[in-house]
Each structure stands twice: as C-alpha cells, then as structure tokens.
Amino acid sequence: MVAVDPAKPVTLALKMDLGVCHDICMPAQLTFAAALQGAGGPDDRISTALAARPKQTGEARCEVTPIADGLRLTANIDLPAQGSAETVVFETADPQVWVAEAQTSRQGAVLTSVTDLVPPSGVPFTLDRSGVTLTVLAEGRAVEIKGCPAP
Image (cartoon, rainbow, N blue to C red):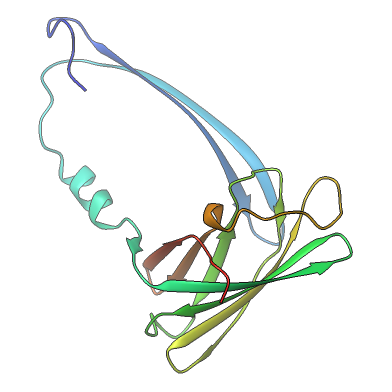
C-alpha cells in the first residue's frame, strides 16, 4: 500500500469473520482500524508470520455421500506424515454450511478424514468441490489443500 500523500497517514481497516472452537464452534467477528503514520519499514514479526503460513501442497480426492441432513465428505489425502497427531479442518466456499469435527486416520502415505456438511436447509445439496479447503495441522505446522476432486 502506498500513501497518496506520504505526509498523511494511511487508514487501515479490517473486518474478519472467524470461528472460535473448543467443544463447539461459535462464529465471531472482529473489526479493527488504525491510522498508520510514517514511512514504515521491515518488521521481523511480519516476516515470522509470513513464514508460518500454511504450506500449499498435497492432493486430496473426495467421496461425497448424501446423509439425512446434508453430505458426508471423505477425503483421502496424499501427504507424508506431518507429525504424530494430525488434525484435518474442512472449509467450504459457503460459510452457511456447518462442518462437523473431522475423524482422521492415517494408513501409510494416505491421510483419510471424514466430516459431515450440513446446510441451513438440512437436506443433501450440491457441493462445489473446488471451493473445499482442507488444512492439515500437526506439531505447529500446517498444510493447506485447495479443492477436493472426485477420486
């Protein structure tokens, strides 16, 4: 971002929708605004945060099965073991679709994770597989996989 007039501050505004989860997930919304003064410069905290972003690698193949109130999504992920306790988090392009906590297991180089997707209508629906994002979390690392085509 470049200021139109470097002598004047640049206004930064952020609105973030997220889920806060423990036993259940609750939606939350954060807003933030600040006036940034001066020329700025490198900041090690930003470099550290950028280095900690999820790596984008691996490939997933997903089977979709209708269930009474939505869909069951089974992802088979070709990914070397990331650590002893791997967790998979699913997201869909539609934020109104409720995503259950996934059940995950590993067999060799394939990580299998199963979740249920329930839309507000509570009936099976058409899933945009390209809008599915899977994030594998393990031992302080994350791997992000975009899209989940059929096997």
